[in-house]
Structure formats: structure tokens, C-alpha cells
Image (cartoon, rainbow, N blue to C red; front, side, top):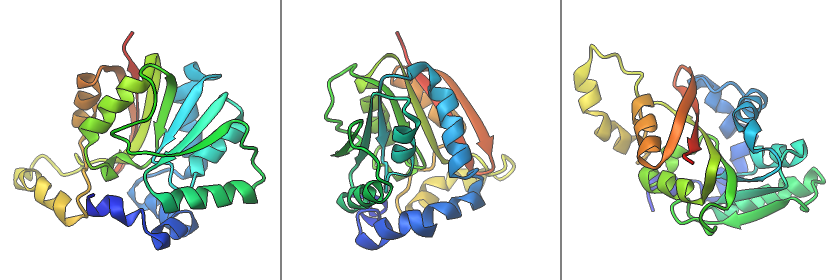
Length: 219
């Protein structure tokens, strides 16, 4: 597994993620948890009442908010990191959240253990840049979404380099390697990736290095 993936499987990072790590994303333009959740809810309104996967859920920041919102009949908190899921379970107990509408699942984002067309919505907050293969992951997301299902994601964006510095753009793959094998896509690359996987109606909000986007599974 890439270094970025393995990093989030460690006990230390899993423990720190919701205790300061994630909050530091505001430097890149992330608007903060409450605002992010409200933005995601707006995109996901058409899927209310269905099943949502909170992919790469980490310690369950958004998973717990989705459960508390009572917008979905089932919230699947999914992550590849065993330690992140342990943290998620601890927070669920601390907050006395019922598991009646919540399931914790350990799975690879590129090999989701769900029947094709069985999921109404999938949310992935601050996650795509950590996936070993965004292309394989988005293709798998498209597979499990029902026609009309919605994919909402947020990530750090890569097209912030000024166009007057083409050499920096050419060197981006090497920058990605230096930054822990993370894959930082541009806005256009995200849209192209979604379209190639059968996800349409790409819309987004930008702020600095931050982007939140939405795409719908074609009917």
C-alpha cells in the first residue's frame, strides 16, 4: 500500500485525526466540519431516505453527523484502516449514538463489498488524494451507486499553480511523490474522471486548495 494509505492505518494518526489533525485543513481552504456537512447535505438532498456510504470515514466525523441527521435509513461508515474504525466505534459509544441505522465496514475503496446499483449516495470527505488509485475507486463508486445516485467528495486541488509557471505543472507527478504518494488532481481532472466512470452533472465549490464536488450516476 502507498505510504499515505499506511499512515492512516497507524494508531497514532488514527488517534490524532479528530483531535487536531483534521482541523488543520482550514489552512487549505476547508471551511470547517459544520459548514462542510451542510454543503454535503445540500448536494445529497435528492437521496434522503436511502442508504449512504461515508467512504474513507476515518474516525467517523461525518458518519456520526449523517446518523444524527436521520436523513438516511442506513449509514455505512467505511474505511480501510482498522484503527480508524476503532476510533469511530469509540466516538459512537461516547456520543451514545444508536447503531440501528449505522454499520461499520472495513473495505478497500477500489473493491467495495456491495451489490451493483444498491447504494443511493456516497460521501468521501478529504479522501481522494489518499486513495492509491482514484480512477479505480471512482469506477467502483459508480458501480455501486443506483442510477440517479449521488457521489459527493472533497479534496485538496492541484490546479492552483499559476499557468505562467508551466514547468511546475510538468513537475507535478514528482511533487506528488514527495508529498507521500498522494494524488492531487485538478478540477478538470476530477470532472473528466467522473465522466469517464459514468457520473454526470459535475458541480463544485472552490476555496483556495479546497474543492467539494458532486456528480450523479447516469440513468
